[in-house]
Amino acid sequence: MTRRPAPCSSGKQRYRDRLQARIALAGLRANPHPRRQEQRSYYCPACSGWHLTSQPRRRKDRRT
Ligand SMILES: [Zn+2]
Image 1 (cartoon, rainbow, N blue to C red):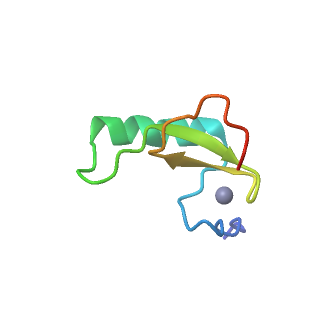
Image 2: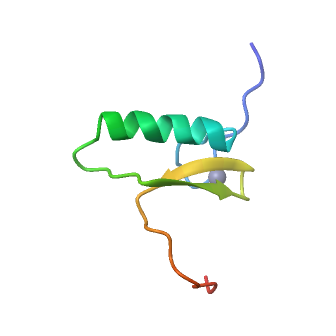
């Protein structure tokens, strides 16, 4: 067994790179979940991985 990275503390599904996230996103678009509408992928510095989110990208909002 290969060692798997620890899941992110966010509890979200983690993808190892943007390509994996985009593939998953494409799959969700082809088969949308009725209550989850992930729209885009984003890099997560906490786990050095990628997640999907339904939140639209904010414009020029750099405050957290
Ligand atoms: Zn993460």
